[in-house]
Amino acid sequence: MDYKSDVINKTAKTLRERLAKTEDKKSILRAPELGALYEHLKTLTAGKLRADFGKEINALKTELEKLVSESAMPAETREPIDVTAPFGINTPLNKRPGLLPAESGSKHPVMAELEKILDIFGRMGFSAVESPELDDDWHMFTSLNFPPDHPARADYDTFTTTEGLVAPAHTSTMQNRVLSAGREDLAAGRPIAVVIPGRVFRNEDLDSRHEHTFYQLEGVYVDRGVNAGNLIATLKAFLEEYFGQSLEVKTQPFYFPFTEPSFEFTLSCPFCGKAGCNICSQTGWIELLGCGMIHPNVLKMAKIDGGEYSGFAWGMGIDRLVMMKYGIEDVRHFESGNLKFLRQFA
Ligand SMILES: [Zn+2]
Image (cartoon, rainbow, N blue to C red; front, side, top):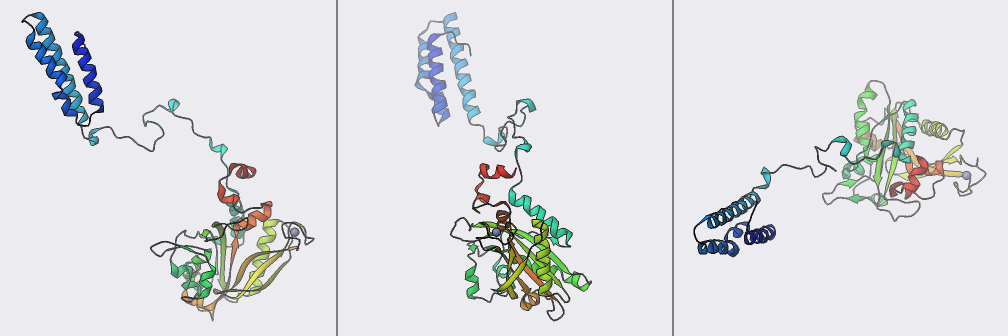
């Protein structure tokens, strides 16, 4: 607006500033300053001066009315914005902020090793199925031959949701699904041969060897006439391929509700050839994983006849394998997001 009169210019500035601050926008049209201008108009004698002054007051009033009605427009009629976009959607490409080049990123060491692990098992005839990150109590415990209220359940420091769902504490939570889905293979004369990588969660006291979130690789194999010798040979073949050298392995008895017999699987240290080093705590041997022959009750819950078929299963900590391979001293590095650590594997 082009106001000529000083008094109108001053009033216009005052009212615009007040309009910006006030909640009740309409009240600006009843402002005493505006009324005073009309009072002043009445005192002027008829003529060009009075006519011009009158036009300027009207122009100011029209401007204020327009500002008031614009501020009252409902939000839906305004142009929508994408609040997740880091720039306006119509910003030309050359004006947009630069994105980090993809080459600056790298695979997480656990994921990079997992690909190698799955490749080896793939060549050994195993298919891969991922495990979920939220499951139910039945798959976590009951289907794995943990009787209700059995103390063995307490060995797994599980996180549960208020709805009663379980953040899986082991990838074995997938065994029943894999066994049930494999019945058709067995009927067709093919074995069930599946590995299950997955993220698992435990309510641990954290230290260099314990983390609340880590990765496991479950293995399940079922066919006619499968025995513990097949289990040991399969794991030995995998480990020798993974570490690229001949290894000695041994088993000692252990307990899991879902395998019978159950074993703790130990391999000769791939780093010192049994001479003793930091990685094997100077013993020459490394206890690596738990395994065993699938308990007949677990087969039965998947409607597989344990008289006709037998099989083995194992659960292996992927983080632990990667720690061993690269001499990583603290498991907590993996989930830390620490770039100094991660860049060593880039
Ligand atoms: Zn060693």
